[in-house]
Length: 174
Image: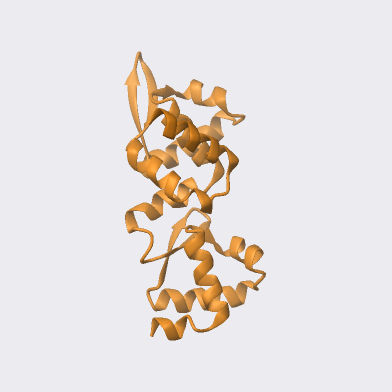
């Protein structure tokens, strides 16, 4: 049945794209594959109905994953770290654990509100943990080893020069 479903070249192309870029979303696929939204939605529905792929909703994005390739637990993490801002915050905290809000804010060109928004999302998803040190809130990545492994494993799906530089540094210090 799966082979019959993937025999259609357009559907195979969509499936292969999701496999190569786990956590991709509809508009991204529209742009990359040159397919119409309606066409994509139809084929995504067929693939999801057959349990070949699944979707994960994160904010305004519905991200897609090949079921056999990405664990359920990793989908939420990937949904967030595929976005540039949360990914950069996570990379900073991997290299600078136990940083306070001001430290993080000083590293990026964010408003306080934007940083607060992203930190809350990362905390809610249990990617970050918050502690106290010298009467200040500090932040660190909850599971550094797992997070670094996810970033390394899925780096090609994110196409980010900063991530490449991070991985070079992380592998040298790790």
